[in-house]
Length: 134
Image (cartoon, rainbow, N blue to C red; front, side):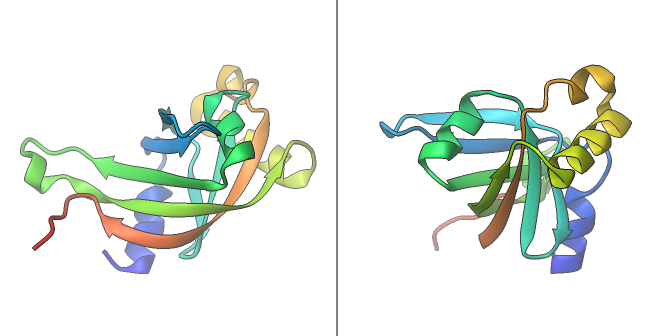
C-alpha cells in the first residue's frame, strides 16, 4: 500500500482499528478505536476517552494502531500496522475541538461527549497487516 493509499484507507469514514498500548508495569491493553485519522503520511491523530489507552500513553509514548478491512479469507484482509510515538496529548484547545467535531459528524453526539483528549502521533514504522519472517 502506497503512503497515499494508506492515508485514504485510514481516513475512510467509519474505519475501525485496534490501538495497542502498554501500561507502566508492562501490561498490554488493546482497544477498538474509530476516531483515527491521518492528516498526512507521517502522522496519526486519535481522539480518546479518559480510558486505559490514554492512561497508558501518559506513561509510555509508544503504541501500535492496526487498521483493517476484513475479507472472507484472512489472507485477503487489507490493512496495516502503524507503530506510533506520541507528539502531544491535548486536553484543551482547537485540535481537541476539531477532533470532537469530527467524531460527532461520524459517530454522533454521544460518542463525541466521551472525548477527553486528542492525541497526535508520529508514525515510526509501518508493517503489513499480515506478514511472516522468511
